[in-house]
Length: 134
Image 1 (tube, rainbow, N blue to C red):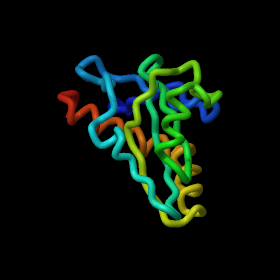
Image 2 (tube, rainbow, N blue to C red):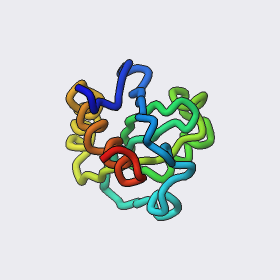
Image 3 (cartoon, rainbow, N blue to C red):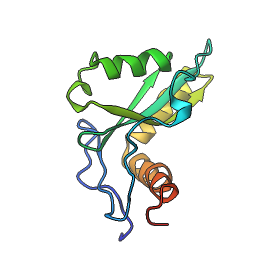
C-alpha cells in the first residue's frame, strides 16, 4: 500500500513509524496542550495510551489505571522499555470504565490490525493536521 506509514513493526520493540518527507513539524516537539497537567484521573477508570519517542520515532502502547503517574514514570526513565527512547510525547489516549475493556483494546492495538488502525487513524491524521499529506 503506497500510503502506509509504518515499516519494520515488532510488538516487543514497539511500532516504528516511517514518515513521509512532507510531514513538516512532525513529530511534535512537545505534548499537545491537553496532555500536560490536565491528564484525567478518575477513580475506576482505565486507560490505554500511545507514546512516541522523539529520539527514534517509535511508538509505545501501554495501559494504566493512573495515566498521569504512568506518563511521569515514562518521562523519568523508570520504565525499562522506554528508558532509552526518551524524550517521549503522549500522542493519544482512551479511557475505559472496565479494566477488561481497556486491556482488550491495548491487546488489539498491539496486534497487526491494531497497528494498521494506529497508523491510519492516529498517526496519519496527526500528520495531515500538521500540514503533511492529506
